[in-house]
Amino acid sequence: MFHLFDESNIDRQAFTGIIQGANFTAAVVKWLAHCKWPPDIQNDYKRSDDCGISWLELLFSFVLFSQMYPPVKTGGQKSEAVFLNYSSKEALMLPLSTRSASKTYYTFSQAILAIRTITGAAILPNLSSKKCSSLRHFSFSGTFAGLPCRPCLPNPGETAQAVYEYVTNYFLPTIDRSCCSATI
Image (cartoon, rainbow, N blue to C red):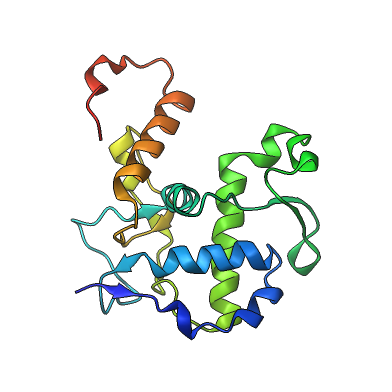
């Protein structure tokens, strides 16, 4: 039995308090409602058969589901932060490093935490660990920013394929991919 987040319990007026924007927040809440989490996850959750999920994978799932990118942070801190629409002319003129995957998934993760704080809703399990090992499947070693518990995503195949293509194109360009031609 898996736990689904019920978006109908969220006061949409609270979205105006999320600095990443109300439309983006609504899209995140809709996506979160389609993620299925194991029931009764404890704060100290740790299972050897669960590699968790990285913020990168969560971001890719969200983007594929919503067809929307998180906004680009251009300056300021905390409540004074300034964001632009990811595809706006102004954002596209910024240095690529401003729209990097790491900055984008950080903005995404911060938006989710803000939604949880402002709405008081249990949109994600409250876990003490913020690490996962899920990217080991893509030839990375170590632990990564993410969650130690992997949900059932609304688009698992598409997400795995997109992460695979991203990783192999941007981080492993010199490897022999002839052995990796099978569809994930």
